[in-house]
Image (cartoon, rainbow, N blue to C red; front, side, top):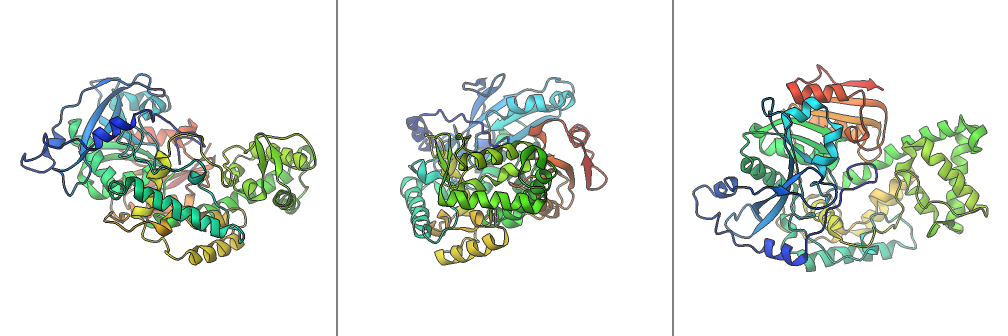
Length: 498
């Protein structure tokens, strides 16, 4: 869940030696000073020009926080924070802290990324503040020593490969425990929310405003639960349902994928003369599943390899972008019939078993640390995952098994990590949601709306893809501006057009 469809901000350039020294730094400067966190909250930040791509115009500083908030005099870790100051000191209201989701994504580039997407009125009133959450990027990063293949997130269910998938899940859990077992229990959403509050205090702010995207919406909601008097204006873009954390979050994509697929069949059928996939939705559907069946027998040649049927359907996120995915499906059918190889994945898609680019496993390590450490709904019996995958695939053929099959959390060591937070409060947040988003869906956003009783929700009708604000101006833009500049929420939930 990164900052645009399929795009991430990556600033993972810190050296391993620096990370180790930061993680083991003594806390003498903060110990024995009255209230346990007082020293952390009063630390003086040293701001310098940021280094690294994606941070143009930003200044950066390091904030020290305890690794374990139950032992604030113990080990400390460093957080990398970035800032672009408000453009009008007289109108300045405070800070707009930001998180790009993931979990596991760097947020240092968010001020520069978001600056052109926010109105001049908002930029005049807020310092835009980004940060790498604990364990991520430049904030004392963790890793599990995973190979690129071991980081592959999708493992479609198949009777023939399920034993290997179980072995993969066990290997990931074992490697993470061996490599970072002493740190993993402290990589939690609640601790990241505590870090946010230390950042707030170190910036000299009484309260913070916030823009959170995808997983960042859950982080923001947890902050409102833990620090209700310090939460000011919170915009939650493409929201998760707190009640589903975390296995339910993965499984929630399947019904939305089926809706998007059905919409695509209708769109493609209406353009049969152009694309030749079928004159009715049923014919288009059959053409797609015939392609999948063919690819399972004989993988379709693509640039750099070949795609199985599982790999093709695992690009399900692309079906929300009908004008982009349709030519790709047409090209795959042609390649399957002996035509030239095509691009490996459609717009917004990712393939089953597809490994990340060579490099750090930091995002994957943080994701599993949070999902497996916080979630309490992960079965321990691999056979339960098998049964759920078969059941979900039968109900949602496109993607049902992808979120239901076995994950490393089945073998994660149950440590002292805090469970996922129950969010149930009256925070007056603004939730914005695209209608056609299969990663965080209108249904999950409604779950966030129920958890935050004082909030309002705007659904962008026919809004496409993951993220309202990152996509540019929309019919929700005026409401976002009004809320951030005046604090006024819409009178009621609404659906807007355009």
